[in-house]
Length: 371
Image (tube, rainbow, N blue to C red; front, top):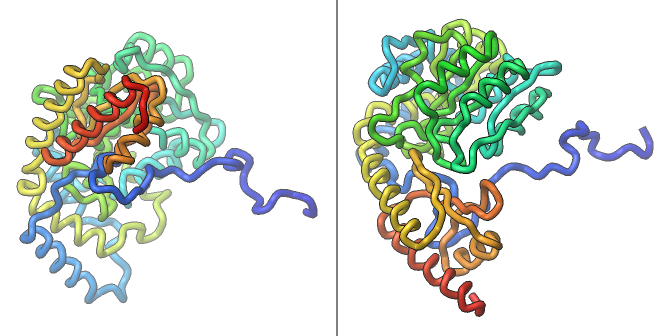
């Protein structure tokens, strides 16, 4: 073994950097699509009490099936697009990241392919890499919509084991048209079609959830998270709805006792406060639409958004714009196609700070002067 690289990484991992958005201590942080409105004191007290009770039994392993939590999640989804979902059709894990990895572990692997359409969530190819699944990326239109004819053709040609499609899309905010879900489920044959609705609660009125199509397609999976609309990013709870056979497959690949008693207690308490925690979603939608309008008034290109973030551009040197915003205490995300930036929707005060900083930065750019 003398002379071989150390440590002995798999070849696809050599030279790769860990995923992660910059974590910079500035007054206005609008780069990770968090909900800026945390739980109320009442909700926090209920969560704390639930965790205290769980702590009394931490000498025992948690419920490995997360039965009570899955019942509660099914009830919530039945109020937001689902119909008659039960525990057998719901699964939960440590963030939607673990949900996605379990899906790739169960249905991907050597000799199998996963498909998505760029630009899309940058972790998808890493899920494929980590599960030794071949990655195939189609492309979106210039407005970031999906050409359904081209998408169907690619899926039929590639015959992927897994199709990964966020709706709304990250980083563009674009929602899938209602007909896309059924079209791609049929094109995928026995392949699993995953509609990632991490930002689903932020969709505009009239935009349906893919949950409505679940009864018609046994190969459809709809994933959600409590990180965004529920303002529970620190708890790490992702979940999905699918046919019972798909849920059973994930139970095969999950690690033993993968969801801690503390996480389960936290999520159950949060679900008891769902109306309150979701109560600021409408405010964030309004602030998003204001931000879109304002950016367009500044002469910038802006992608249509059904999420709690907005992609805008285009800039000849987006990194310089990003850095000058950071210098003014505003952190957004340098992501997506070259020339574009993404801003998460914060409080009105945070968005005003963003607008003021961007106005100053653009003025400095036009003058060609210092930041």
